[in-house]
Structure formats: C-alpha cells, structure tokens
Amino acid sequence: MENMFAAKAYKVLVVDDNLINREVAKDFLSTYHFQLWEAEGGFQAIDLVKGIKFDLIFMDLMMPDMDGIQAVEKIRRECGGNGKNPVIVGLTANETEGLKEKFLTSGFQDFLTKPLHREQLNQVLSQWGFWEFGEEFQEDVLQGEADPGFSELHIPGIDRDLAQEYHGDSLEDYQELLKLYVLDGKRKKELLEQLFADKNFRKYEVEVHGLKSASANIGALELSKLFLEQERAAERGDGELISRNFPELLAAYEKQLERIQNYLKTLEEERGQGGIPLSRDTLITELKAALEQVFNFRSRECLKKIENLLRCNVLEDVRERLTEIEEQLKLYEDSRAEQLLQELLDCLVEEEL
Image (cartoon, rainbow, N blue to C red; front, side, top):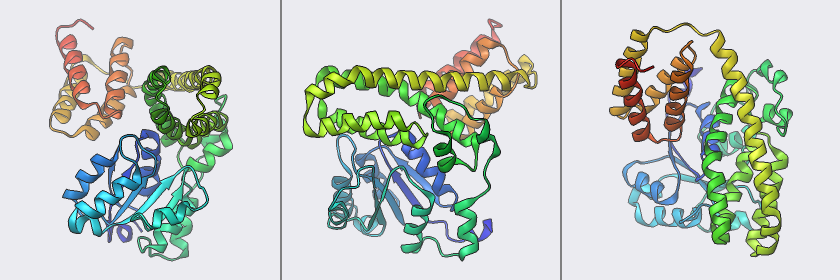
C-alpha cells in the first residue's frame, strides 16, 4: 500500500502561526505520504510559493501581521503560475455564518475547522482529487490501530478520550506533541503577559485564538474554553473583561503546563532508568556527528540523534544539556542548538562533565 501512496507525492504546504496546530496538521497529512512544507505566517508562505509549485495549501485564517485571506490574495496575485496552481483550503477555529462564502470569494476552494478531524480531512482530500483509493484504503487511514497505551494516560486537565480520539494511533506521537506544547507554552505565556500589559488586544486575540485550538488539540478542553472566552472579549474590544479574567486564564495555563511537564518528567525518568549505558568516547563521537548534521542544515536528522541519546543512560548534567538542545531543535532554533552542542562537546573533551 505504501508504494501506491507514493505514486503521487503531492507537494503540500501548511501555514499556521501556532506550532502545535502545524504539527497536528503535518501528522495527519503524513498518513497520505505527501511532500510537506510548513510556514508560520503569510510572508513566509508567499516566499515559499514563489519558489515551489504546490498542489495544495492549508492556510490558517487568523495570524499576526498578515491574516490568511490577505496571504491568499497575494499568492494568487503575485506568485504567477505557482500562485494560480494550488488548491487552497482555509483553516479556522471559528465557524461562523457566511464564512464559507468569504473564503470562496477570497481565492480559497474549501475550508476545515480546527481541531482537525481525520474524517473531515479525508473528505476534503477526496473532493479535490488528492485521495483516490477505495473504501478499504480509506478505512485504514481513518481508523488505524488504536494504541492501548492511552488507557494508562492520566494528566489532570486532559480529556483522555478526546486525546485518544485525535491521536489514538500513537501514544508516543502524542507525547511528543505534549513536549512541543510545553516548549511553546514557555514562550506563549511571556507573550500573553506582554500583550496584556501593552493592552495590544488585537494581537492578544490572535494569540489566544491559536492557543484555543492548540489546547483542544491535546485534549485540554477546559483550558481551551478559557482561551475562547478571552478571544471573544478581545474581538469585542472588551478590555474590562479581559483584565478581570486574565489572572485566572494565566494561572490555569501555567497549571496545565506544569501538569504536563510533571507527566513528561516521570516518563523520561522511567525511560532513562532502563537506558543503555553510554561511554564518554561514544557520546563524544555521536555529538560530533550531530554537530555536523545541524551545521549542514540537516536539523531533523540531528534531532533524531539527540532523541536517541536521551534514551540512553547518561549523567544527569549531560541529560539536562541534551534536553535543552532537543528543545531548541524542536523550536527550529538551529543556531542556538549548534552553539549548545559545541559547548557540551567542549566540556566533555575537557572532562568537565
């Protein structure tokens, strides 16, 4: 079946300012063996379309600096044949009356609501000719085989049934998504505090909008509802309500991040205890290879190597540094990851660790 999928490797671009939402979309789309690209905003998407002839683009509607409608209008107008070629599907967490018509008159062909559901995604792909197999193949993609590990998932604030509904075929992939949620949360929390202090409610609306769907994507439904309330208040320009409820929202967000972090820490401790011991020389050799990979812009390969090292039994100081490198790679901060790798290598060579 995999060869049949690969026969038509369509070029697909996912555009969303929220890291978690991009990862979920890419995870769902990877099932179809597309060639995938991503962009975190309209300007980056336009640059990509100018150089690559995409077959399909998924475009988030609400983004900072340039919204999805503006981005699509520019793509259609300024990117020549590359801009006219792709089917463009809008992504939105707010399904309102007249929204479909608004999309269709702005250069889009269709739209999907977030959080994404595999069945809805499959229907859109089928409608536009990107999914051409029979019912037996569709059932395989839509249903998959449930990961029994979800029965042991216990994180306060996370609806396990909802998490399993969205990500039930792989608990490990879901755990990786939780890691990204926590990593991104460190930045998002500071950004929310800054936007609130500046009373920049327009950008605040965009950020809580993204966090609403990102939280729903991991099953944090109650937190998602709090973000929705703030989004609606910002949309109305109700600064008084935002100010009154912001402390509760921030506290709930911090608490949820802490709960997930505790779960992940326990998970890493359990894995680390059973890890293979790694000699200093082997560790140095592996880190040199990782440094070469990130230096040569092969950051995904470097990330896999760091993840494999974290599964081994290493000194706690080394584990902490490897974890920080892993975080930077996942946040696409390759230069910082390269710097941290070099520092770790220098310490090991000089036997300071």
